[in-house]
Image 1: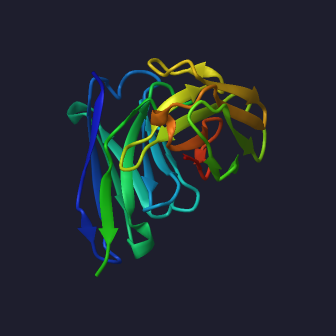
Image 2: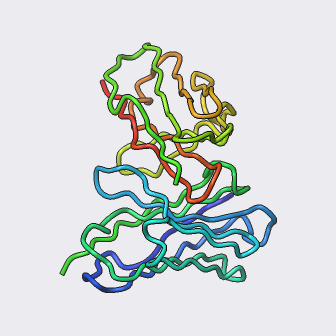
Length: 120
Length: 106
């Protein structure tokens, strides 16, 4: 059974760096084709894709945020980590991690999401 | 980046209605189009992948069609549990992009 769970701070101050961890089970990120992405959703707004890491350590980022984002994986721990630098109140959102079985497929499993608020 | 545009933004409907939501890509994405349903406070749920393939466990009243730049999601007979927001997403190129959402409301 596939599960994903996001963890990290619920509150960060402006200019700080956010570090989120996606801990998953039921699949391996070393399996060919597997990938995990981060997607966020500001309150009342649409979904925004942030980043993706593939089984072969390929990494891809949102064009508008790529200078602030870093995605990495620890296959032995079944974790994917996203860091976002220079946080701003507009980055307040629910952050989701999600899995796709192949890069071109839809996201078939999602975490429950974690709400991150940026405020001083 | 490929822009995804959904219409309408909101859709008043009643139980039993046939509902159609459209999604247009700013360039051809072949059939690399996915549809999600999201209810308040919940993560999105994959309904349709590759434009027209029904995800396992999704009721057959949901269907998808289209290729290239124009796609549709159809709910053949709206059920009470279908009142939600629906998003399209392209998986043709990186960065992935989502539509702005369509809220199906009573």
